[in-house]
Length: 419
Image (cartoon, rainbow, N blue to C red; front, side, top):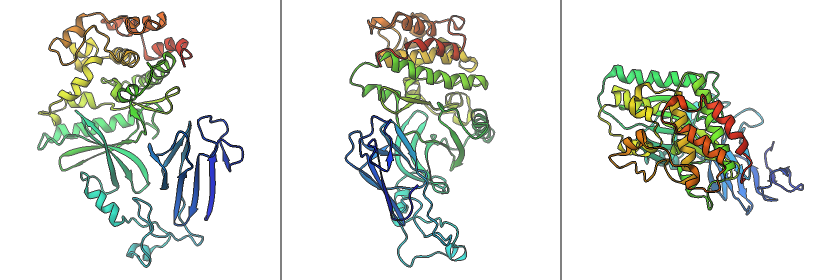
């Protein structure tokens, strides 16, 4: 804990104030935090691997309550108490943390100086106008990405200073009110299923809220400071080690085991729905987009939307069950997609010979053609891992792994190979 006009260095050295000697990826003196009211400043000290705030590499930046600092293999949650010794709060921008100009005051602050003031500086108000409109409690700071299921933005929830991701679904204009209400209820039921105590499974992206603005649904989700697995694997300088693939697979299957135990099938497991954080040799994994594949394809609220981009990204990971009857797929379909996902991360190929998801015969190949053995692409792959993936990719659901837990246990022997 740091007090006013205090400073501390974090690093691997035993000589710094906050020593993390067990983290070998930290520099000896990695970053410095200095408290100079009303600001708290972080400065990277020329570290080898860099310092990130909420996933973005920084050199020097003000810290805000709710920020997450990542350095080496370590993560630090920032808690900033701005109250003064007499219990009053100075006025500061909830967006960037900048102190209000001298002499600035508001009626709310004069009436109750012991409560923080909700105020945005001109710069943050200008930034708000650069992005699509959202709930006033959220300040969008940048666009993260987008696809067939909408655009995603990084934002900060001002009332609690929490970083979040906002997925803005495509606007569909006037639709059936009953169908729209059903979609909203379905997403809230999903939240209750996956987060019954307010906490989500550690390998599932948390879903906080849903609201509608001018005919557009906006989903408020946990912000994960990482890349999706499709992008992440393309940055590796060597093929994905088998031990790392086994680690990713076990995290993914743990998430699926949890959702299946709640009676929920994901339906759209694929590399772009896996978010990867942490170092390449020891990644952490979170599975995203629960419920959206089913809702987009079945709900009247989204009739008329085209999903070509989304389907194109998904086809290579669909099970035969998806194609035969998407409405009635079971847990084993997720296991097939998990196998196809691991196969792709290991080989950068789909599991079928000469497969192209844009070809007219793509569905027929999934239904009829056997999977290509893993060792056709990776000759040094363990024979047992090849058998494991072949079983996950069986055409008949009854021939696949009986559960996510069973498939996860089968991955255990490969955790230490090539890491």
